[in-house]
Length: 247
Image (spheres, rainbow, N blue to C red):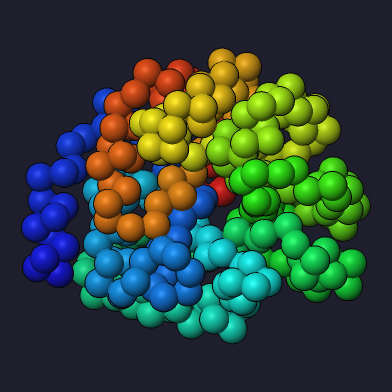
């Protein structure tokens, strides 16, 4: 842990307010997607979250048909390796795994075939789309998910260009029963001013159900720290988020 410990040594001040106990969107399982690239990096990231006061991490590798073809067969063995490494560190952090599903043809096929999906808990399923254009079938997929008993959790809507241009659609999703998850780093400006402004607007409107780190790598930690000390985060923490119901 030497090199990673050096990176983290002076970059872990206590947050300005009490953090959430559960992070439900991250990419900490090594070599499964564009997240952690080694077991050592996974452990360093998870220890940072534990030091911040988190009690549980639900990490969510990408599942994308043409890019990251993950499944329980790849996710759960990697999870067990990370859990074992954290136990060796003396950690008490709870670590679970689900997935971040891309809404593509494969996902729709699984849904229609009643193939079980990896859930955060209680049928919550984290989903994402491409950033530029709204899929023509988006509302239909959300409707089908609910018919199957799942609770769609829409990952980082503040980052989608098609919602930045028409934010009234976010209210339509909210009113339609879609659960909305913003990224913590959006509150630090990491994804640009448009994502920051839309995330702030969603907080002001009370449209946020979950907040996730969406942390991939060590370089993200300084942006997470900045977000934890931001004014929008303070307002967000005064709202009835669902994160801690996942304990």
